[in-house]
Length: 162
Image: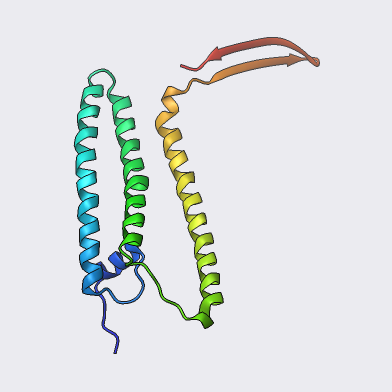
């Protein structure tokens, strides 16, 4: 008989990449790792908020953009890399396989890698869109107007967009 898992347990297992049952050892290790990640984030948030407040006196828009992008980088990369390293060191994501199912496990890992690559590509596409949207006002475009009459350029006017 299979025990029904709560939604919270499913989220924890998915987030930390745990296969199989979530026993007491894995739960305590996840709690320890999550507490360490929280402490890193709490210190970062304190320092970044102070820095943003100091910069906001002179340029509030720039401070907001840098605070948001810094938070995305911190959570998206630094904390995720810490979680990956910590869960591997604690051996809570290890998956034992039999020698007979080795090829099938390699094939599954290869397909999972392709799926994650597509996911990261889509994620970075949207991050680029957001970055372009935030930084659009800081980029000045040069616009040129060309008037062609009877196959010759008769008027060329260029200006910077304001």
